[in-house]
Length: 449
Image (cartoon, rainbow, N blue to C red; front, side):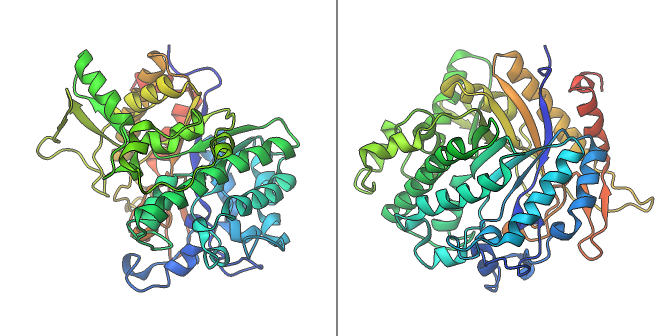
């Protein structure tokens, strides 16, 4: 069966992680600009102020995308680059950058997939309460309208939010990401509800204002549970584990962040265990959140394995990435399969990849065989999900290039392209050339290697 004829092969990035130009041409501060200034929050006090200098090197980067054979490129827009104060006066120079980037992509035959929010919340709005402010969904809608009016004559594919579990959970609960808060459950659930309302309003704005026929998606994290065997009881245990909501770990619950978007209601088990902490949820709120979507973007890197309801501990010396994440290719089989089964939306893998310890070899190349093996295994698992009936329409490797990896700074390398952060020299890794061949064969190469 293999990959569908019109399967989309791409790579992804985010604005704060690659753009640089943090204080140039009228851009406002983001919560990440501010967070990185706090000593000890990021590895060796690294910041995203320069990152990959993509704002000045985007033409070179698009040429590299062309060299890789990418059919699509997923990137995000920095909200404070467009609206320095988060609302109000538009920074024309900021919009001009994205305008030129999109033109460059289209010139090379690469489809732009635009993510409207990948964590760089405007600092000026944070000072007004950020996601806790009931106006925050409307602020996001205002920003969406400005971007869509400018870019939708060329952009067809839109993603509203990237990983609310992370920017709410890690940023407002654990405090390890920007803005670095440790809120109680009442405030945390309110911030999360506002983020979902922002998603819904944003979808409405895109539908109303898009100049081209648009495709709209949403990209949460996929918490994946893998059955230890194909036995019915193991599969059922994994399925239940995928969608359960507990008070202790609700922030990573698939159902809490997906059911309102796709089904129009919060999960019953979540409402039960979180009773007493829930915000006031107005009748029309869930109607606003539950907007028709064209695709389900999902970010999957790893999974946990269960056998008849019990977690199976990893084997001694299990394979791990440089970030110590377990290498579990079957996550890309069972995750999309269970998600498609429940939500019945076409799926695009909007992120999948690994951090690896890459460096330039004496011959001037980057020989990252482990990344090739990782991608090979995960893509074969994704192909298996397709063969088992899941409607999967695309795959975006994370990341296009080595970049600023949030609190890990420049200590983790996820890219298909190596970046020397002193000279900014780019070098396509062996994995990039391998991926190029996979794309050219529409995945057929995977079964020949």
